[in-house]
Image 1: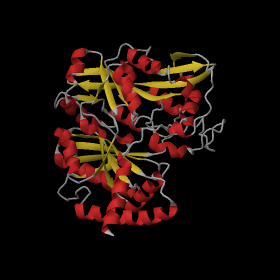
Image 2: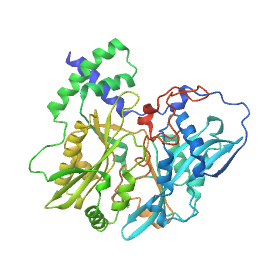
Image 3: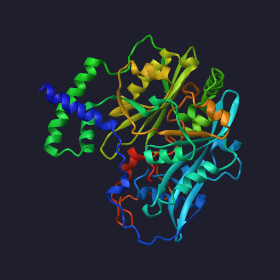
Length: 443
């Protein structure tokens, strides 16, 4: 029996480590015309929202909202340092229809005493008949002027190869590819993995029971959970709207600690980053303090269930004075407890410097690894690009890029396809089912 449990547990735990290179569109491609109309690239407009939203939803990408477009391209604090002419993205247009899209989101970064104007690509999606010319969207992103740093975060190896071909380099932190996670609800976690593996009903019930038992025993025996201790600093919970002056002071102190690349975490930027209109998930802020002095914070997102029923909480960001290990421990323990109360099946963390990951590793999380580097960058200044080739030059987390800027959300003026079936009947998928694929660019 022990051998069977071990096999089942191994199968379940490796399921999350794998990331199939099969695109979500490959299972139900609509008919591709034998003679496609020629496509032209142009800058995207805010009025393109409905056409782009339909294109993205048709190919299994996260629902977005017109309110979030307004937030990204009108209310973004980084726009104060960006030229007025900076595009919101580019589209491919053929026969009066949008057949391809890539977004262009402005960011601010700090590197030592330098403030960098950065851009991150978002949501690359191209109809099958036009993927041969779809590379022109990536080229337009990397050709734009008045940019100090280009960032591309993706889960698709093919998109990473295109970025590399356009002279972007991989993030020099090999551990960034490895996601750490803790299982909070073994039974629900195993059941969702059985659905993901398409295990037949009878085997699913038996395997689910045995897998849950094996993971429960493994968690207990190996103590796979963050340490709880009364000796750790106090952690309290606030909303993003309550982020105030103490966060601003922490940010100013943090950028002066050492020279490394940090995406803007000023109080205004944090509030803007976390408050997504129509968000289907929940974002909370954990603050760790001593004598009313902010020592650090963590931002945690509780996601809606994915297509297999998996509920996931993610540590989106964490910033701690001098990367103090006891503060990191306290924030991790608080995030674990909050994720459990939120009803999540797993708590997940990705990225962060080696010294912070070392603290995470002390609680023996499970691991899964992306099939290719999910983070590429290119600096306009060759000397800066060279400096960023060192792992110590980075403080990278899901806060960077587009990973947490666009989440499943619905617009008040453009409701979701509630039937889950596009007009052409090509795909059947309820809107909530795309939550796990929110960062999957289709190419």
